[in-house]
Length: 201
Image (cartoon, rainbow, N blue to C red; front, side, top):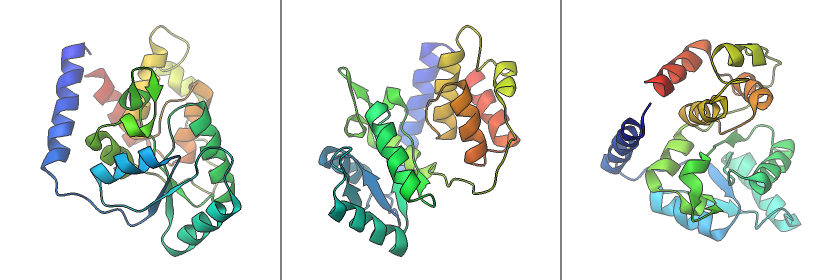
């Protein structure tokens, strides 16, 4: 897919979201900082809780606990190492939480990576694609499936994984972690194949 086609697809997505009335999210969105909250509120009508980094305070844990019990939560952290570590801690404590992922390309500006850099349409898309983790063990996808699809072990496989993660709303991951996410978030073969067709267009 050439750059012009990719830009056209992104423009169509942006136009589609701009036409929509400002959406409301039922769940409370757990983010890292106040700049993330500001970016989310530009995009949608939602309540947030800020972790203020990795050292989450007891009072913040209590707020998240209450939100999880009363309304449900969506974990939405930056697509970088720190964000992934915060996500992991939250998910360990709240396995029933939904997760939303933002593509790194949508979150990066002048070398800085964060939700606060994302356009409203990208934030809306990420939240619309928020997923639950399945509780039962599932092994529908393996690394071999990814290799067959050009997502592992070949030239351009990293870029294809980035595009697939964005299309499915599950974020970027290496081959092993991507197979795990496909299984963990209940991605079907139909969804997988449709996403492949999208990134190959």
